[in-house]
Image 1 (tube, one colour):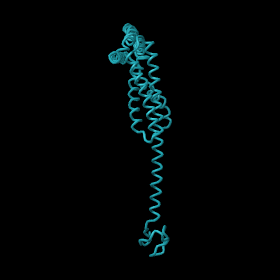
Image 2: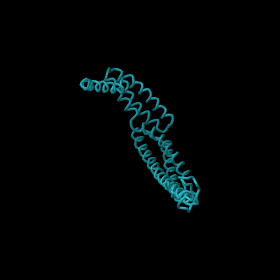
Image 3: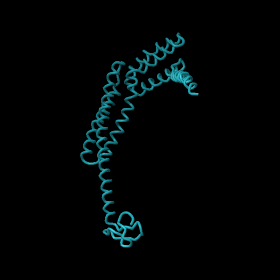
Image 4: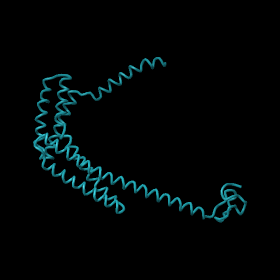
Length: 235
């Protein structure tokens, strides 16, 4: 039985390898579908960011001939050409435009949250500074997105700067949020310690019940008045 398993193992691994590759293998069909989806994405970005419309149109004009060239090819050659068209269409600033939208939302949400969770005066001041810097970064981002860029090269440059600006603002907010969390955890630990101390002190002055005979005894009695058993443990 062991010998059979040993013999079948390489075949099983080969089967898994082949099917694993097949699951993510590029085909004419899925690359064509990707092209249609990507083209819709770029057209939506043109509508959303009119200032970048010239740069986005230039990217479409760059990718379309590559896509059209695939129609005269077959098999892997067609797949490679379609894949190249998709990569050309979506590279650089196009992906960055999508990322800026997500990052802007994250900075806005983090800015509100860090301000709302500020506790003592020092935390409020840190949160106030981080929130103000974040708002400046958001304002700069809005201005850049409104102005746009005429060419893909210009769009690549301005959006790289925007993303760096937003990421710096987000890191500053995250740092303040980290300090807030540390202080909150420290305060909770202090409260838990005080609660435990109070509980122990209360237990120390509470009357106690003998574990052996059940008689109640005064807190300062070391032995049970009924059976003589010690305060803790049985007779």
